[in-house]
Image 1 (cartoon, protein in one colour):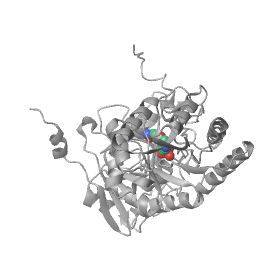
Image 2 (image 1 turned 30 degrees about the horizontal axis):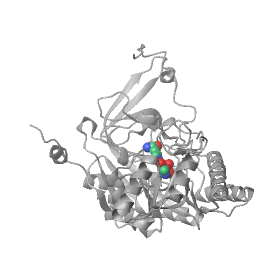
Image 3 (image 1 turned 90 degrees about the vertical axis):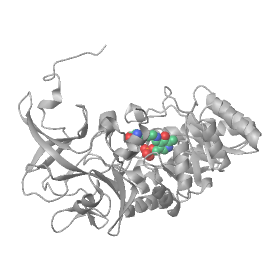
Length: 467
Ligand code: LLP
């Protein structure tokens, strides 16, 4: 049963001026560098520019709304992770955003790639990614997906269930493959993040529990399978995590498990993957750790645990997705309407409606994710007013930026840019209300190159085959 209540006093937030963390910026046109990709600036006329292209020209050419991907920023972040984690394998987690261009950039920057579906694997392979640098994830890989991975000789399959192990063995027997595998384990960590994106506590679908012994059973099973080479153990505690505490517990429990495996079998497992999940800044309230600090923290933890168990430090890997691609991309929208509403507790809120919404970024609706925004086509001399940037979908929860100060002269026709839209935005986009998903355009040294073209109604009609 759904509990209904009268909107108003029960919604304590509507009478508030905004969340506590949000203060009116001194300069409403300023760009907080921790939120924007490295090449973003304002030109002399006040227009936002990225990669040497101003957003007004970009939208004139490529349409609105638009995702703008900053190539230099992607390369820089990929390189920062690779350098900071020197000696470790860095798998870019393609689920955050993957296109064939991105697969190429991942290759060129010397990273590995984590894919979690047959679709992602095909994008990676057709994008030219070396299959031996790919790790294949998924809690319910189909036989076809496993066959695709094995026949292309992917570097590693991260196994997630006994059913999957049996399926891999069957394929290996039938086709003469030998699978390199890691066992995905659940270290029983309560990661401090939204419950939908926490993945290492017991009551969820991924991996084998360390606590109840299933992890060890799976490891022994893979180790003694003639079809498999067991490389090690994999753990991923969740996403958008800021403190290394969860990784510490995960490292402690996975390394203890590896040492118990050695005691039981006499075999030392060479590899440990601690997964991804490193947080990024969506608003001025977020302060993520740098790759250098993360690397130092994780190295200390792993070395400490290795000493504690008298084992050699395993070959380590991590799988950052959001932390590499999140800040590389902004979304730019065109304002259609501006409406001021009275709040029950007094005060007013300005609703700024744009030409996109939950179909191009579901994260605010799904995880109550916070974002930021600025006026992008000009600077303003006006003061800021608390706004809510909403989309054009037929749904009250269609919010893009819940609370943000925008100039009080914001008007239809203005452009709004939302930073940190690279991870899980286009990748989770939908055609809700038969919206056409926006293009993703790469910007670099003054050039715009489409990575994913804008959808057209013809694209949708191609799928609507009935009459
Ligand atoms: N490795 C594994 C095994 C994963 O499951 C994930 C994310 C990653 C790496 C990459 O995590 P990242 O570094 O990007 O946090 N849609 C959600 C996030 C789901 C994450 C799923 N797994 C969101 O929009 O916040």
